[in-house]
Image (cartoon, rainbow, N blue to C red; front, side, top):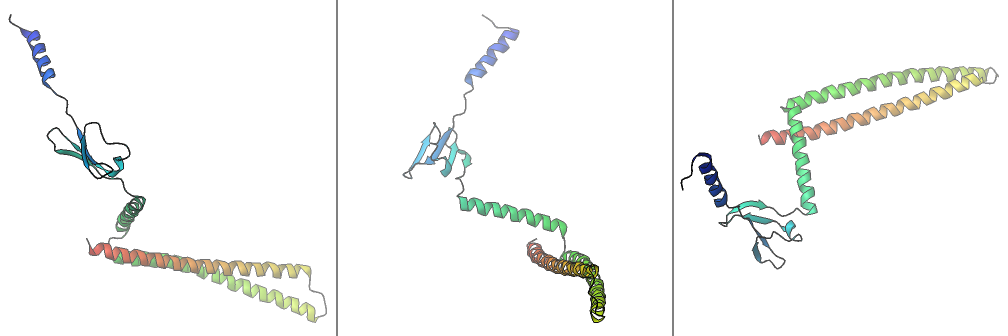
Length: 196
């Protein structure tokens, strides 16, 4: 019997399909006693975290599944990833050390401007308080009782004084934090540029 046309193609395709064998995988791992085991059933669930190798039928390693990290190793790896990310961002911001110095100058000049404004306001408030206290002293010397309105104004000016002093202290603290942060960035950029 002679096969023709489409029937011949289907027959050949059937033979090819039958001859294709599915790849078999083997798993190589160490058991609880440290003995190397090769198995087709897979790795027991309690040993998967220790890592294993996947082998083909010829015994060649086709995939390596590393052991799971300990919590300490995981934290170390996460910290290294975070540091690498921070380093990339730092090098995107500053390509040279001089860039950091200029950025620091701009930032501190801005803070110094805010401090100058606050100090100017404080001087004005101090003068106003001195004037109000002088008026109160004049009233007392004249034998009159100091007016409630004047006492209220002195109290308000005293609160303004405290608020401005606290504001200046916050600006000075912020300036120190900025200088410290830029110093750390500068040290790190110098290290990174050395290794480039």
